Amino acid sequence: MKIASFDDHRVGLVEDGRLYDVTAALPAALQAVPAQRINWLIAHWDELQPALARERAASGGRALDGVRWLAANPCPPHVFAAPANYRKHIGELGTRVVTKKGRTAREQGFFLKAPGSVVGHGGSVELPKASARRFDHESELAVIIGRGGSDIPRDRAFSHVFGYACLIDATMRIEADRFEEERTMRKSFAGFTPLGPWIVTADEVPDPQRLDNRLWVNGELRQQANTGEMIVGVAELIELVSSVLPLQPGDVIASGTPEGVGPFAPGDSLRIAIEQVGEMTVQVRERAALSPRPY
Ligand code: MN
Image (cartoon, rainbow, N blue to C red; front, side, top):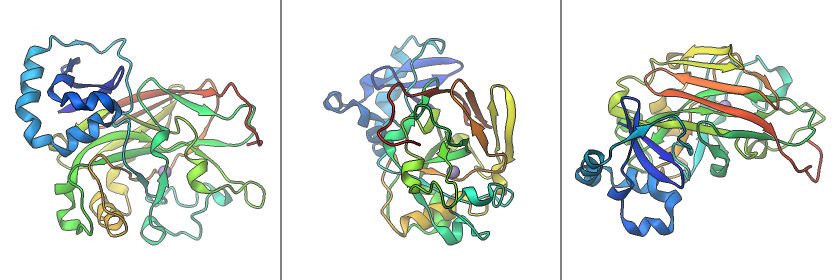
């Protein structure tokens, strides 16, 4: 199933190019916290099936054109991210990265992106005004956690996966000895974590380590790789993260970028496509207000 979040946090199923509104399957109490609907749906997935089927059958559906998409999960409890998880990406950015000396995600561990930096298909990546810094795209497979838990061994990790989405890990680069801001902030400007266009449930992705992952800037192909090239695979990422902090339903793990990372600028259009998952486009814009310090 493909589960989308749209308009004012309504929840829909995407089937055969149409969107079916199933929001009424969720408890009315969630109207007080609509951004939590996807987390609740994930946590109560099995018991929700009859109500989802009922609402799906009752909904006439609508065309996908004109839908205002929100992030696939608009309010993930956490966004964990793997650095240096594709061999050919390691080293391609020289001194502009904090993961140096050929260290991989296995040695470095994960970092965090602010959950509030997520945005959906058709949304905007917002750059600081009048910046001369370099901002890069990183094309990544996002893993959406279903059942939470601590100390999840890798051989049971897939039973904790709810589904997958496309994720762009937008990043402001450091410049050694000049600009070396902390990583969480550099990757957490508004809109710096496009996540979408929907969540595809794990049953539709038999092998997440065999997916083509591509990213274009203004129609030009910049990144192309297969998730089979990951150094630390999805199962081991879940083992690693859950050994530090309990995973929660709705958590997102960004699994790292392959080579081809490169800059984008205001006015650019970024398109990511992951086989069996979907395709998402976002626009790069410049913020209207000047920041209180230069970037
Ligand atoms: Mn990344």
